[in-house]
Image (cartoon, rainbow, N blue to C red; front, side):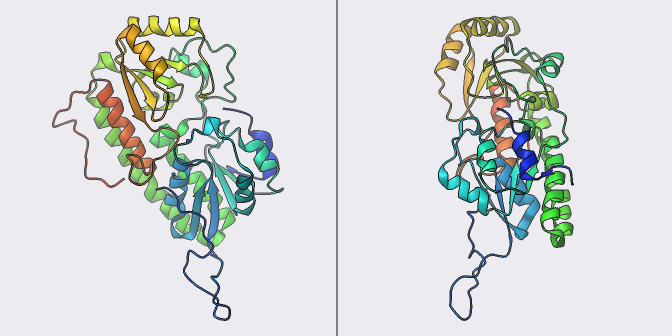
Length: 345
């Protein structure tokens, strides 16, 4: 069995814990051909892939190219931590040729959904084999997320996609899984993965340039929940703490945890708190009143936007987030640190 490609029975056990181009909708007639006898549209012969989240669907489409139609399960703008599947989602899972998930505890909602979708459905776990950033690792790396008692973290932090160089490994795992399902396309998938890895390397360099303009004393992150650890590790930032002391947005902070976070912010001088778009900012604004923090409310970490939004693709999402974080931390832009602006997302 290839790494990252799991039968349904194994994947149902694996999921135990913890957000869409917008990918094209599944369309059996999308090739525009019809039966010469009946005039009815012919079924699309391409591989039909269902990705759990929108950012993941975009990555899959980049690797699959024209050989697959990629759809997404969790709608644009919906937090996967709180996603509740509908009966229609069971049919979409059952009809897909292949499922692609982040894995490592992100898609807890899929356990029952997959169990009911039919034995043997092939599943690619994009994050398979990548070491996770656990609580102990986060503390040793300089994160001070506070008291985690009573909060379920599953296998560790699943937000690996917020490090573009880890997404290079996603691309390889996805290419291998697609080739298993469609051996005739193996060379295409491998070539697309290599090209996408190059784009991710370019993205990494762009983000480094953007964040290089942040003064050393301001390279401090306060977040809505514990999601930016991999990003911080990659780009030399320090996570001071999170409003919700969990890798899931379903957690609630205690009064003691908030008091401890306020004290850490005052001690470190963290300049801003960063929230995902659509998150209720009330708690962050209360924190800002206590500490003088700037509240930044336009990150996209677990969902893309529609095509007319600031994050219609994974690459665009990461560029947008890096710009927002650099600005929120007080970056001083110079001609030598200005990020390129001419690249397409």
